[in-house]
Length: 316
Ligand SMILES: [Zn+2]
Ligand SMILES: [Zn+2]
Image (cartoon, rainbow, N blue to C red; front, side):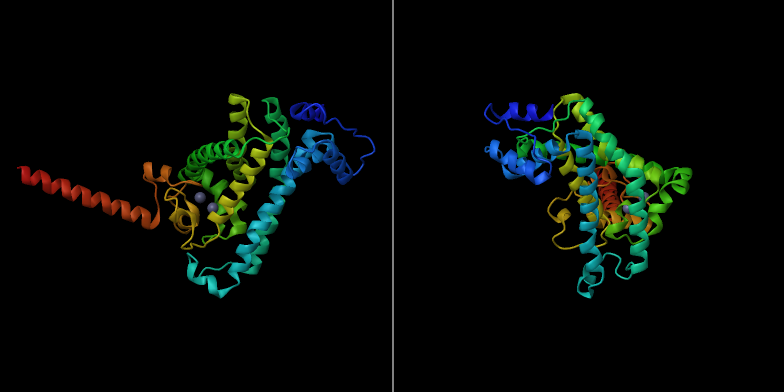
Protein backbone atom coordinates (compact mmCIF):
# COMPACT_ATOMS: atom_id res chain seq x y z
CA UNK A 1 0.00 0.00 0.00
CA UNK A 2 1.39 3.33 -1.07
CA UNK A 3 0.78 5.32 2.16
CA UNK A 4 2.64 2.82 4.31
CA UNK A 5 5.56 2.77 1.89
CA UNK A 6 5.82 6.56 2.06
CA UNK A 7 5.47 6.74 5.83
CA UNK A 8 8.09 4.03 6.21
CA UNK A 9 10.53 6.04 4.11
CA UNK A 10 10.38 9.07 6.37
CA UNK A 11 10.15 7.95 10.00
CA UNK A 12 7.97 5.99 12.34
CA UNK A 13 6.06 8.87 13.89
CA UNK A 14 4.30 9.93 10.72
CA UNK A 15 1.42 7.49 10.65
CA UNK A 16 -1.87 9.22 9.95
CA UNK A 17 -5.46 8.13 9.59
CA UNK A 18 -6.81 8.32 6.05
CA UNK A 19 -10.50 8.05 6.99
CA UNK A 20 -12.62 11.17 7.10
CA UNK A 21 -10.58 12.79 4.32
CA UNK A 22 -12.92 12.78 1.39
CA UNK A 23 -11.57 15.87 -0.33
CA UNK A 24 -8.09 16.50 -1.62
CA UNK A 25 -7.48 19.45 0.71
CA UNK A 26 -8.73 17.53 3.75
CA UNK A 27 -6.21 14.88 2.80
CA UNK A 28 -3.55 17.54 2.45
CA UNK A 29 -4.31 18.96 5.94
CA UNK A 30 -4.18 15.50 7.42
CA UNK A 31 -0.83 14.78 5.78
CA UNK A 32 0.57 18.16 6.83
CA UNK A 33 -0.27 17.38 10.46
CA UNK A 34 1.61 14.10 10.53
CA UNK A 35 4.45 14.65 8.05
CA UNK A 36 5.99 17.88 9.28
CA UNK A 37 9.39 17.07 7.81
CA UNK A 38 8.14 17.05 4.21
CA UNK A 39 8.29 20.24 2.16
CA UNK A 40 5.16 21.86 0.71
CA UNK A 41 5.46 20.18 -2.72
CA UNK A 42 6.09 16.79 -1.21
CA UNK A 43 2.94 17.21 0.89
CA UNK A 44 0.91 18.21 -2.19
CA UNK A 45 2.31 15.19 -3.98
CA UNK A 46 1.65 12.73 -1.16
CA UNK A 47 -1.89 14.09 -0.67
CA UNK A 48 -2.63 13.56 -4.38
CA UNK A 49 -1.48 9.95 -4.47
CA UNK A 50 -3.12 9.12 -1.14
CA UNK A 51 -6.33 10.85 -2.14
CA UNK A 52 -6.51 9.03 -5.50
CA UNK A 53 -5.76 5.59 -3.99
CA UNK A 54 -4.79 4.42 -7.47
CA UNK A 55 -1.30 5.21 -8.76
CA UNK A 56 -2.05 4.54 -12.43
CA UNK A 57 -5.04 6.87 -12.35
CA UNK A 58 -3.20 9.49 -10.28
CA UNK A 59 -0.23 9.52 -12.66
CA UNK A 60 -2.41 9.36 -15.79
CA UNK A 61 -4.56 12.35 -14.80
CA UNK A 62 -1.63 14.41 -13.53
CA UNK A 63 0.51 13.73 -16.63
CA UNK A 64 -2.28 14.51 -19.07
CA UNK A 65 -3.43 17.71 -17.33
CA UNK A 66 0.17 18.83 -16.98
CA UNK A 67 0.86 18.07 -20.64
CA UNK A 68 -2.14 20.16 -21.78
CA UNK A 69 -1.38 23.03 -19.41
CA UNK A 70 2.27 23.21 -20.46
CA UNK A 71 1.60 22.74 -24.18
CA UNK A 72 -1.03 25.45 -24.51
CA UNK A 73 0.42 27.59 -21.72
CA UNK A 74 3.82 27.68 -23.41
CA UNK A 75 2.31 28.24 -26.88
CA UNK A 76 0.25 31.23 -25.71
CA UNK A 77 3.15 33.73 -25.38
CA UNK A 78 4.22 32.84 -28.94
CA UNK A 79 0.67 33.45 -30.24
CA UNK A 80 0.69 36.88 -28.52
CA UNK A 81 4.19 37.70 -29.84
CA UNK A 82 2.98 36.96 -33.40
CA UNK A 83 0.47 39.80 -33.00
CA UNK A 84 3.02 42.35 -31.74
CA UNK A 85 4.98 44.13 -34.53
CA UNK A 86 7.83 44.99 -32.13
CA UNK A 87 8.98 41.36 -32.16
CA UNK A 88 9.08 41.14 -35.96
CA UNK A 89 12.80 41.95 -36.07
CA UNK A 90 13.54 38.62 -34.41
CA UNK A 91 11.21 36.54 -36.59
CA UNK A 92 13.32 34.11 -38.61
CA UNK A 93 11.08 34.02 -41.68
CA UNK A 94 10.05 37.61 -41.32
CA UNK A 95 7.15 37.74 -43.75
CA UNK A 96 5.51 34.45 -42.95
CA UNK A 97 3.23 35.07 -39.99
CA UNK A 98 0.59 32.47 -39.16
CA UNK A 99 -3.00 33.70 -39.53
CA UNK A 100 -5.50 33.36 -36.69
CA UNK A 101 -7.32 30.72 -38.78
CA UNK A 102 -4.12 28.68 -39.17
CA UNK A 103 -3.42 28.87 -35.44
CA UNK A 104 -6.97 27.76 -34.68
CA UNK A 105 -6.90 24.83 -37.16
CA UNK A 106 -3.56 23.75 -35.82
CA UNK A 107 -4.75 23.89 -32.18
CA UNK A 108 -7.85 21.79 -33.00
CA UNK A 109 -5.85 19.02 -34.67
CA UNK A 110 -3.29 19.01 -31.88
CA UNK A 111 -6.04 18.74 -29.28
CA UNK A 112 -7.68 15.86 -31.14
CA UNK A 113 -4.36 14.06 -31.33
CA UNK A 114 -3.72 14.63 -27.61
CA UNK A 115 -6.97 12.90 -26.69
CA UNK A 116 -6.76 10.04 -29.19
CA UNK A 117 -3.05 9.24 -29.52
CA UNK A 118 -1.15 10.73 -26.60
CA UNK A 119 -3.62 9.93 -23.83
CA UNK A 120 -3.26 6.13 -24.20
CA UNK A 121 0.55 6.51 -24.37
CA UNK A 122 0.59 8.59 -21.19
CA UNK A 123 -1.76 6.11 -19.51
CA UNK A 124 0.37 3.10 -20.39
CA UNK A 125 3.55 4.74 -19.17
CA UNK A 126 2.89 4.26 -15.46
CA UNK A 127 2.23 0.47 -15.46
CA UNK A 128 5.22 -0.08 -17.79
CA UNK A 129 7.58 2.00 -15.66
CA UNK A 130 6.17 0.64 -12.38
CA UNK A 131 6.94 -2.85 -13.63
CA UNK A 132 10.61 -1.79 -13.74
CA UNK A 133 10.60 -0.16 -10.31
CA UNK A 134 9.49 3.44 -10.84
CA UNK A 135 9.20 5.31 -7.54
CA UNK A 136 6.31 7.54 -6.46
CA UNK A 137 7.38 8.02 -2.84
CA UNK A 138 8.51 11.09 -0.89
CA UNK A 139 10.89 12.72 -0.16
CA UNK A 140 11.84 13.53 -3.74
CA UNK A 141 15.26 12.56 -5.15
CA UNK A 142 18.02 15.22 -4.99
CA UNK A 143 18.01 17.90 -7.71
CA UNK A 144 21.37 16.78 -9.16
CA UNK A 145 20.00 13.31 -9.80
CA UNK A 146 16.84 14.64 -11.45
CA UNK A 147 18.86 16.94 -13.72
CA UNK A 148 21.39 14.26 -14.61
CA UNK A 149 18.69 11.78 -15.60
CA UNK A 150 16.86 14.44 -17.64
CA UNK A 151 20.13 15.28 -19.45
CA UNK A 152 20.53 11.58 -20.34
CA UNK A 153 16.93 11.44 -21.63
CA UNK A 154 17.57 14.55 -23.76
CA UNK A 155 20.61 12.93 -25.40
CA UNK A 156 18.75 9.65 -26.00
CA UNK A 157 15.63 11.37 -27.37
CA UNK A 158 17.71 13.50 -29.69
CA UNK A 159 19.39 10.42 -31.20
CA UNK A 160 16.06 8.65 -31.68
CA UNK A 161 14.54 11.80 -33.16
CA UNK A 162 17.44 12.36 -35.55
CA UNK A 163 17.35 8.90 -37.10
CA UNK A 164 13.58 8.42 -37.25
CA UNK A 165 13.01 11.97 -38.52
CA UNK A 166 15.75 11.55 -41.12
CA UNK A 167 14.21 8.23 -42.23
CA UNK A 168 10.86 9.98 -42.66
CA UNK A 169 12.50 12.40 -45.08
CA UNK A 170 14.70 9.96 -46.96
CA UNK A 171 12.07 7.30 -47.61
CA UNK A 172 9.51 8.99 -49.83
CA UNK A 173 6.79 6.55 -48.77
CA UNK A 174 7.21 7.55 -45.11
CA UNK A 175 7.33 11.24 -45.99
CA UNK A 176 4.20 11.16 -48.14
CA UNK A 177 2.14 9.04 -45.77
CA UNK A 178 3.35 10.19 -42.36
CA UNK A 179 5.58 13.23 -42.11
CA UNK A 180 4.05 15.50 -44.75
CA UNK A 181 1.36 16.74 -42.36
CA UNK A 182 3.97 18.20 -39.99
CA UNK A 183 5.46 20.12 -42.93
CA UNK A 184 2.21 21.84 -43.79
CA UNK A 185 3.69 24.99 -42.25
CA UNK A 186 6.92 26.03 -43.95
CA UNK A 187 7.27 28.77 -41.31
CA UNK A 188 6.53 27.05 -37.99
CA UNK A 189 4.91 28.58 -34.90
CA UNK A 190 4.78 27.31 -31.30
CA UNK A 191 1.45 25.47 -31.55
CA UNK A 192 2.69 23.49 -34.57
CA UNK A 193 5.20 21.52 -32.44
CA UNK A 194 2.88 18.52 -32.18
CA UNK A 195 0.95 19.12 -35.38
CA UNK A 196 1.59 15.75 -36.99
CA UNK A 197 0.07 12.49 -38.14
CA UNK A 198 -0.97 10.09 -35.33
CA UNK A 199 1.69 7.60 -36.49
CA UNK A 200 4.37 10.29 -36.26
CA UNK A 201 3.18 11.32 -32.79
CA UNK A 202 3.53 7.69 -31.74
CA UNK A 203 6.88 7.16 -33.45
CA UNK A 204 8.54 10.33 -32.18
CA UNK A 205 6.69 10.13 -28.84
CA UNK A 206 8.49 6.84 -28.25
CA UNK A 207 11.72 8.81 -28.07
CA UNK A 208 10.30 10.70 -25.09
CA UNK A 209 8.63 7.80 -23.27
CA UNK A 210 11.05 4.91 -23.94
CA UNK A 211 14.33 6.34 -22.52
CA UNK A 212 12.92 6.71 -18.97
CA UNK A 213 11.45 3.18 -19.15
CA UNK A 214 14.73 1.70 -20.39
CA UNK A 215 16.63 3.71 -17.77
CA UNK A 216 14.31 2.39 -15.07
CA UNK A 217 14.71 -1.18 -16.35
CA UNK A 218 18.51 -0.95 -16.24
CA UNK A 219 19.09 1.01 -13.02
CA UNK A 220 15.82 0.57 -11.13
CA UNK A 221 16.29 4.19 -10.08
CA UNK A 222 13.71 6.61 -11.45
CA UNK A 223 11.22 8.83 -9.66
CA UNK A 224 8.06 9.78 -11.48
CA UNK A 225 8.67 13.44 -10.61
CA UNK A 226 11.74 13.22 -12.87
CA UNK A 227 9.49 11.91 -15.62
CA UNK A 228 7.05 14.82 -15.17
CA UNK A 229 9.87 17.36 -15.31
CA UNK A 230 11.38 15.61 -18.33
CA UNK A 231 8.04 15.97 -20.18
CA UNK A 232 7.87 19.67 -19.23
CA UNK A 233 11.43 20.34 -20.47
CA UNK A 234 10.85 18.35 -23.65
CA UNK A 235 7.63 20.28 -24.38
CA UNK A 236 9.44 23.58 -23.86
CA UNK A 237 12.18 22.42 -26.24
CA UNK A 238 9.72 21.32 -28.96
CA UNK A 239 7.49 24.40 -28.73
CA UNK A 240 10.37 26.86 -28.61
CA UNK A 241 12.06 25.11 -31.56
CA UNK A 242 8.89 25.78 -33.56
CA UNK A 243 8.40 29.34 -32.30
CA UNK A 244 9.88 30.95 -35.42
CA UNK A 245 11.88 33.48 -33.36
CA UNK A 246 15.61 33.82 -32.88
CA UNK A 247 16.60 36.23 -30.09
CA UNK A 248 20.05 37.47 -29.06
CA UNK A 249 19.37 35.69 -25.75
CA UNK A 250 18.32 32.36 -27.34
CA UNK A 251 19.88 29.40 -25.57
CA UNK A 252 22.11 28.25 -28.47
CA UNK A 253 24.14 31.48 -28.18
CA UNK A 254 25.25 30.25 -24.75
CA UNK A 255 25.20 26.51 -25.48
CA UNK A 256 26.49 26.22 -29.07
CA UNK A 257 25.38 22.59 -29.39
CA UNK A 258 21.76 23.43 -28.48
CA UNK A 259 19.54 23.35 -31.59
CA UNK A 260 16.74 25.82 -30.84
CA UNK A 261 14.41 27.65 -33.22
CA UNK A 262 17.07 28.75 -35.69
CA UNK A 263 17.99 25.11 -36.35
CA UNK A 264 14.46 23.76 -36.80
CA UNK A 265 13.03 26.75 -38.66
CA UNK A 266 15.49 26.11 -41.51
CA UNK A 267 14.32 22.50 -41.60
CA UNK A 268 10.73 23.63 -42.15
CA UNK A 269 11.79 26.17 -44.73
CA UNK A 270 14.10 23.92 -46.81
CA UNK A 271 12.49 20.49 -46.10
CA UNK A 272 15.94 18.95 -45.94
CA UNK A 273 18.67 18.67 -43.28
CA UNK A 274 18.66 19.64 -39.58
CA UNK A 275 16.83 16.49 -38.48
CA UNK A 276 17.76 16.46 -34.78
CA UNK A 277 15.48 17.85 -32.07
CA UNK A 278 17.57 19.24 -29.20
CA UNK A 279 21.23 19.21 -30.20
CA UNK A 280 23.29 20.00 -33.26
CA UNK A 281 25.86 17.19 -33.04
CA UNK A 282 24.08 14.48 -35.08
CA UNK A 283 23.53 16.81 -38.04
CA UNK A 284 27.14 17.97 -37.75
CA UNK A 285 28.62 14.45 -37.59
CA UNK A 286 26.41 13.08 -40.36
CA UNK A 287 26.76 16.19 -42.53
CA UNK A 288 23.06 16.84 -42.77
CA UNK A 289 23.13 20.47 -41.62
CA UNK A 290 20.83 22.80 -43.44
CA UNK A 291 20.94 26.54 -44.16
CA UNK A 292 23.75 28.93 -43.24
CA UNK A 293 25.42 26.42 -40.89
CA UNK A 294 25.80 23.95 -43.74
CA UNK A 295 27.06 26.69 -46.02
CA UNK A 296 29.64 27.81 -43.46
CA UNK A 297 30.85 24.24 -42.91
CA UNK A 298 31.11 23.45 -46.61
CA UNK A 299 33.03 26.68 -47.11
CA UNK A 300 35.34 25.79 -44.25
CA UNK A 301 35.96 22.37 -45.81
CA UNK A 302 36.69 23.97 -49.19
CA UNK A 303 39.21 26.36 -47.63
CA UNK A 304 40.78 23.43 -45.81
CA UNK A 305 41.06 21.45 -49.05
CA UNK A 306 42.60 24.43 -50.84
CA UNK A 307 45.12 24.90 -48.04
CA UNK A 308 46.15 21.24 -48.05
CA UNK A 309 46.33 21.39 -51.90
CA UNK A 310 48.67 24.40 -51.72
CA UNK A 311 50.78 22.67 -49.08
CA UNK A 312 51.27 19.56 -51.24
CA UNK A 313 52.15 21.73 -54.27
CA UNK A 314 54.84 23.45 -52.21
CA UNK A 315 56.23 20.08 -51.15
CA UNK A 316 56.62 19.18 -54.82
ZN1 LIG B 1 10.78 17.06 -41.09
ZN1 LIG C 1 8.87 20.64 -36.90
